[in-house]
Length: 391
Ligand SMILES: NC(=O)C1=CN([C@@H]2O[C@H](COP(=O)(O)OP(=O)(O)OC[C@H]3O[C@@H](n4cnc5c(N)ncnc54)[C@H](O)[C@@H]3O)[C@@H](O)[C@H]2O)C=CC1
Ligand SMILES: O=C(O)C(=O)COP(=O)(O)O
Image 1 (cartoon, rainbow, N blue to C red):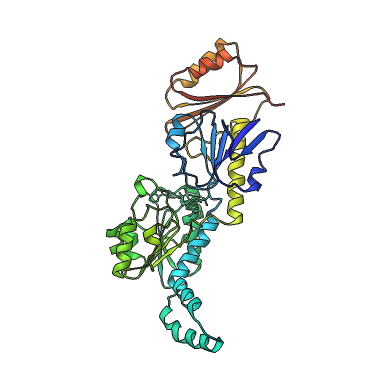
Image 2: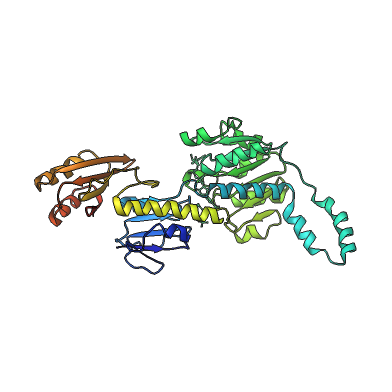
């Protein structure tokens, strides 16, 4: 029986992927084998040694101490692309709200008093204050062309916008999905000089903190729109507020409001709503629950942010899995210990990613506590699991 601790509400469709005969799931579980979460901030939490896998039902993992988990040999899974359409739709909503002054126009409309005739007069007199502009004549800059950025770029093109993209680390998969109509910016500065609106879709990491800066905002034409549904911190909020106050930037659409941002009339603040659709919540929960279950049951690794992909069909016997530092002779030391214990290797898979290597070994016999302890004792072994034979 595996124990799963949930730190946020996880869609029941996802939790149903963990059969109750094998999985106990709850928000108060101690000594869990796995953790499922969304945006819960784990950095200040003491993560029990019992934890073997963490599953983020979403994309961003900046709320999880991934490096610490890597050094403990614990994979962190996420759900790549599972909420991308939801975010794309909210980006488009934000762009349209900003360019048509929808928020202030609605506030005006809801503040009108009087009978129907008076309302009609006020509406017709007041609408001139909310004249907007249309998207087709405008250029959108998309920073980060991953699951979300590609969808936003393609959708904006289909709405008639010119689209300029920037992503020096673009994956082959994203490059295949990106419309050939999206132009490539040679640098971030190059992107900002061309764009009436800029939207960010990068993870919050050191390299992306503050990339929407005072200097870059000045490069944009007057009246520009900034959309940040990625993470607070990617835009320099102080610089954006200064640019709004000067009348250079027209609107800041943000999914991560702060006290200062929320009270500004030119800020459209959403309550971290990007991934909050039934579809996205279900997609994310199902995807990450499957990854955590496949790892706990069989040692398979799919969609981990810190481990290599690893899949080997079960041959029926006992399986051991080992995460270790990616240095020479680890597999040699492990197989020597197995040979010394008289254990034959039926199948072996060894994969590496950055500093971590991961090995799956199916054995022709049962492994003793002593041999397990010896493997765990090899310098560089970060974690080891023994999975009972499967009929
Ligand atoms: N508001 C919300 O509810 C949501 C917010 N997000 C945020 O959006 C971010 C992006 O999500 P996805 O598109 O699903 O992730 P993704 O991993 O598919 O795409 C991220 C892209 O950013 C690019 N990138 C990384 N560093 C860069 C840099 N320095 N300059 C330019 N590009 C860079 C990568 O190459 C990748 O193509 C997440 O990390 C998360 O922080 C994601 C989902 C929901
Ligand atoms: O997937 C992401 O990165 C998100 O920001 C979504 O967060 P949430 O799952 O809605 O708390």
